[in-house]
Image (cartoon, rainbow, N blue to C red; front, side):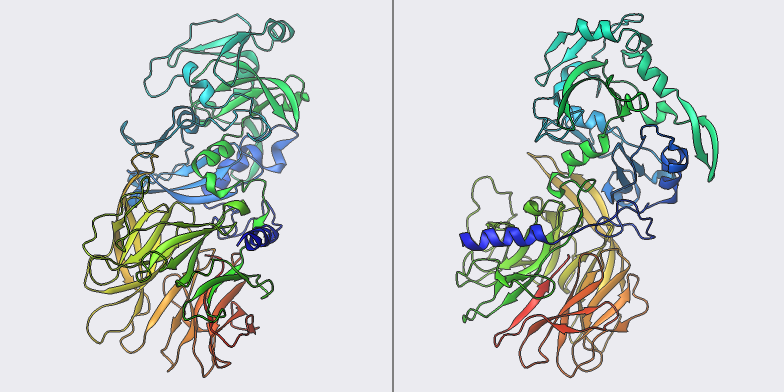
Length: 620
């Protein structure tokens, strides 16, 4: 297996496509058009300060453009979800509470310092995590800047969550205080003397008990060219009390590696942002907003890599195959053109078929979720395959004892099957199917198997779940009743709790407003897959006498046939950029994997074996 591990890691690394950072596409989504604004209100706020027409050489307040959007859990928001979009220096959000669509940006710095991820308005609504001890507050990333102070370094000198910490009023003094990675304070009289005018304290905020120096006060109250209602004018660049929040620390000198060079910087933490002062920079860039959006994303979504400086990812096509001569399915992977067909999950005479990917901008963190019988040899269970070929078990409902450290799987009276694990676009949850309560039902859990929650509670037979691109909806196939047919359904996810704490993770949710999208009494419709931009669903239907691949809008309208053969075509899957669809067909006498354009043209065979190749998974 070692030889395959090396080659597969190389395959994932090679499948990377260069993308633009800001292209203004109409449909934003985390894995398609991610640099488009998900809301015109977000764009309006960004353009006020950072539109190229008004930047005039000054430092950025948000960043060059957005690079990730999603619906994140917040208890008071509709269905427990608020719309967010990330920028280098902050996160914009629309909470939607009581219909309010104002743009806010969260208390990200407070969360990073405290380790308490805010999940609602009340004080108890926090997911407890370690403070961000591997995220430097300034300079380069941790890998090349590991000796610089992190957010955790500031915990003892910051005011947050009613901890009562305050600094004395030191107006008219210049700053000599420094802090290191361990949180130890020291005195830098040399820096105080060299920059005494710039660092003279001019404001004391009595609410939180912290001092603001001249150089930061000038920046906070800066006026200049801005965009308002699409027109260039002049005014306050930002309302700093809204954009920054109140100061939660005094300013401190820190040493940080910036662009590979160690520098002395002055850093001050506010509730929402960080300000840095680098005296050696050009005048226009001496004071800058810290990259809090990047920092928070690394802390919350470490498994997703660094989308702000990474090119667009791609993924190989994983598929099941019987080419090794056994009766069981093994999992293989290949490039999108059919080249480099390699064994992805080791052959141990136990069936293993792919279902979905954990996507990431870091190729080393890509994982494939598979169904496998390698536990007790009979019941299907959920496993992951890493980029290096390492397999990790996720569920234990086949009677196999749960090892120490594995999340509790719930009581199961007799061995059952868990399968069809579909990973949410943000890589934090999975929707899967289990027959532990009788007929196959849909469950949702964290991707490590923690807090498994049943969301379908009926006498129907459910299968093949798929997430919407923004994480707000779930799609799946269901068969209800005797002599009934499978149809494709969509429902809203209503989140009641999402506490992804390290020690006691807990989620609770339900499905709302279920809609039958195909609504057929004469044909079977199934295997829905959502396009990366969230606008289309590709699926399988036998409404014309044999199984074919169809396409419809995400609301079920405009159902269009894409394949037309006398054989069976099915199990379609999208390429991650949404430009191609892979599918399975037995049109040449046995099952093989094919590819086509999204309008059904350009159908081409990718595998060609006397044994069966099918159940492909490409970009989801």
